[in-house]
Amino acid sequence: MGWIIALIVGGVAGWLASMVMGRDASMGIFWNIIVGIIGSVIGNFVGRYLGFGGSIQEFSITGLITAFVGAVVLLLILNLIQRGRVR
Image (cartoon, rainbow, N blue to C red; front, top):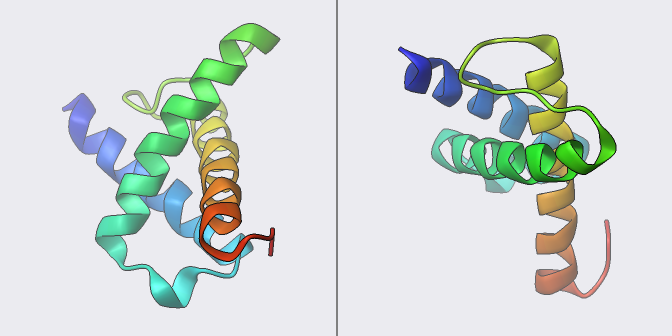
């Protein structure tokens, strides 16, 4: 059951991050889920060193925020690689 919640939370976090970063038109639901899940891994990795973090396998607001911030960071890095600038 945890992986279903991870897909849903990852999809929501990836979708929100793509809207904030202006990439929503170029990404589909599959890539939103991938960005959200990878963003959650990045967010949890950084969050452990800062003293917070949350799992997306059990729904919590902390987990959603962590996944969202990580997804935004991932999209920032992708923008730098693809366009040479942050949007």
